[in-house]
Length: 372
Ligand code: SF4
Picture 1 (cartoon, helix red, strand yellow):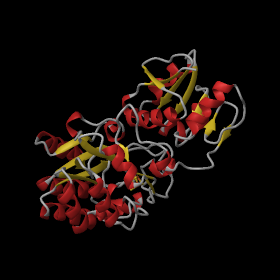
Picture 2: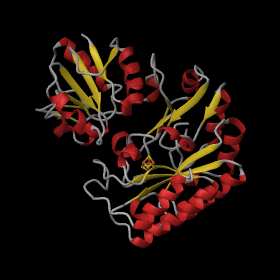
Picture 3: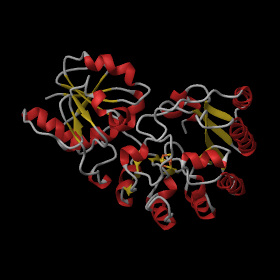
Picture 4: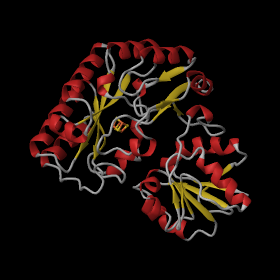
C-alpha cells in the first residue's frame, strides 16, 4: 500500500515526526502535492483548512486528515475526509494504516470517521518515537503545557501534563547536525512540571550537546517568569543564540488575568531587564485585538511594546479565535488608530516583526526575517 503525505508548508515538522513514526512500522510517507493512491495524509490548521477542504473531499484515494483543526473539529472534518486522526498521530496513524491495509474493521482510539468517533485513551511517550528520520526536523524536547492561555491550542491537543524526551535521545538526534534547534511550549521548562524549573536538567542537556545550541528561539520560546539569573547564565554559557524569545502578550495585567497567562506585566519587565544585564537581546511576543480589551488596555500594550523595543524587538500578532481554545467563537476587536501607527513605525525601524493585521502570521507563517 502506498502512503502519501500532502506537502503543506506549515506542517513540515509534523511530517518529520510522523514520517519517522510510520517508518518504524514499515510505512514510508511519500511526499506529494496532489492526493495520490492509495492513501494521502494531510495535517491542516484553522487558517489553511478551507484551502484543502475541496481537494480532500474530491480525492479519488483514501484520505486521512489530522492537525490542530481536525483535532478541534473531528466530526466536521469527517464530513469530507475518510478518516480523521484526533490529537497526537505517532501511535494512531500507523495503527490506522495497518487497519486500512488489512481491510479490518474496528474503532481505533483517536480516530473519527463519518459514522463513529473513538476518543484517544492514551498519550504518546516521546522516547518511543524518533523526532525525525530521513527528513530533518526540529527536535521536540517537551510536549503538553500546564497553563491554559485563552488563545492557545496546545493544552487542548497535548494535555496539561508536560512530557519530555530523554536527554540521551535528544542529544543523539540533535548532534547529527551543526545546529541544535528545538520545539517546546516553554524551553526553560524542560525536565519539569512546567511550573517549577529544573535548571540542573537543562544544564545536563546542554553538556550532552556537541554543536551550536539555539534554545529559547522559535519554535522553543519561553515564558517570561522563567527568565532569571540561572536560566540566562545557562544560556550565555552554553548557547549560541544572542536573542531570547518569550511571550509577553499584553501590557495590561487585567488582560493577562483574563487570558489566564499566569504571569504579570512586572514579570515581563523583569525579564527584559535581566536580558539586558546578560547582553541578550529580548524578543517579546504580543497579541493585539483581544475581544475584551479596552482602549486603555491596548494603550498599555503599546507602551510596553515601545519600552521593550528600546533594547530588543517585538513580534506582534493579530488575535485569532482558534477552535478548541477558551476564546474560540469570539471576535477580534478593531485596533486603535495609534496601534496601526506605532506598529508601523516600529516595523519601519526594524523593531517589530510579525503582523498586527494578518493573523496567519501569528500562528502558521513566519516572516522570512524571523527564522533564526
Ligand atoms: S501560550 Fe504557551 S504557556 Fe500558554 S497555554 Fe500555550 S503553550 Fe502553554
